[in-house]
Image (tube, rainbow, N blue to C red; front, side, top):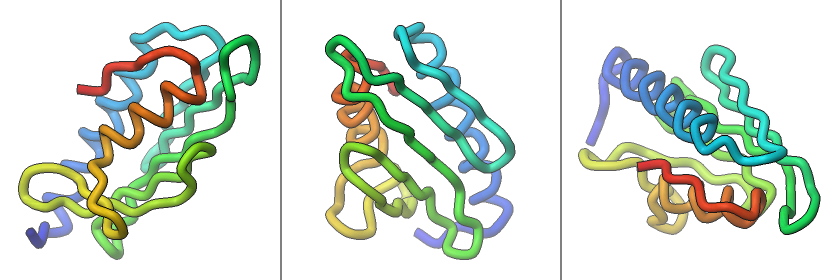
Length: 113
């Protein structure tokens, strides 16, 4: 599904805001969340039961994609398919992959639904 620039901006900003709220509300130890403009950064301290690492989730306006950099699964790009954000590489769904990666890095489940 092709999104207009305005639709993409609105959807991407809403998504990043919801992700930041969901991760912050989990109140997981050693997890720091920062949303600045089009970039959401999640830093997780390594420690007991935690792999740790830095996640960067950002909107990429020229391609109308959400980009994820994960210390668990690496870099991936997601396009809106009319229903959800799907990987352009392997058809993984963004929220599922991010939730799984966050659980591995933080050692706790974080509900992103």
